[in-house]
Image 1: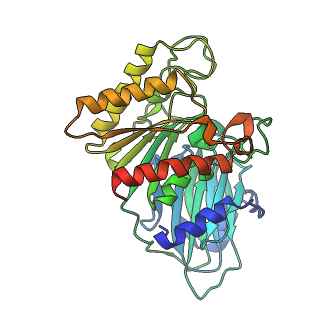
Image 2 (image 1 turned 90 degrees about the vertical axis):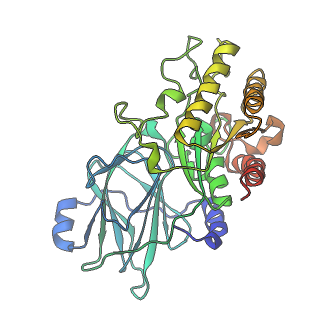
Image 3 (image 1 turned 60 degrees about the horizontal axis):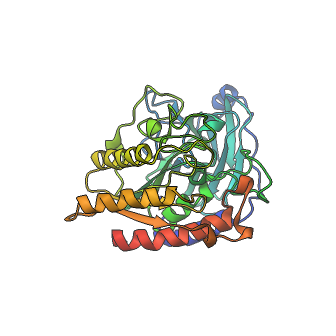
Length: 374
């Protein structure tokens, strides 16, 4: 894991336009493995997994949530990924250099992540998923290094941990779009530059995103009914979105803070959900988080795409929760008004772009830092 003094560099690097495109994943895996003898399996203890992963088969780790990352420290001059994927995009960072874009177009492949490195010092690699579950799932089988080389013990993980529960904004939908007129594409989505990722890095915290575009607290975007059958709370306990049967073990990764940014889709189109139904569901979500993470601090966001009456409904839920728990207030309200963003701060389908995400984080970070004493 990166040390705190590297955080600023990484954040600046992620803001740069990604100009280097890694080789597409198309090498024959079996042939390369036979020739290399530098295969590292996915269950190597020196690999760090950040976010929700399905380890049912420890040699073939499955994942699909946006922002999950795989980190390692390795010997040698090269590193390739054994990855089965088709359509997702990743940011790959080698030794704190500017991130490189990795695109996938093969279902069973070896992806070159680094080559021609110095052989005199160890190297670090971070692979972070830019795209969300609707683009698809992926399977990670490990690394391939130079012959006879191995992974090394990684840096200590941060003590601070934040979980974000959200929708398209948390996923980084359209964040790299050139204007509000473009529409969704994997190429313009980048969870690494969502307000959530920027907030996590700014606070030197490990972060996990549980987010899916179009989902609400009770009603999803464009639903003809006031209540949807599978809003975001229905997905909250999944290890991966792609498998509704596999439930996440919340004890695997326990955050000290949880940020909830939901409500945009509930009230983006008619018919709006009933206020009581919405507020009861929001309250139940808070209570679920509290049960899973005893002692956690929660921050309920009314973001720049949320207007009335939703902002008032969220504020009222938080105020009621704070009245109930007078002796230990663990829920806080943060409002980010639409006026906080300018015309230059919007990407695809009028979602915040990188500038807009940074402005959101500038409001959230001090509020979390104050309450968490970070």
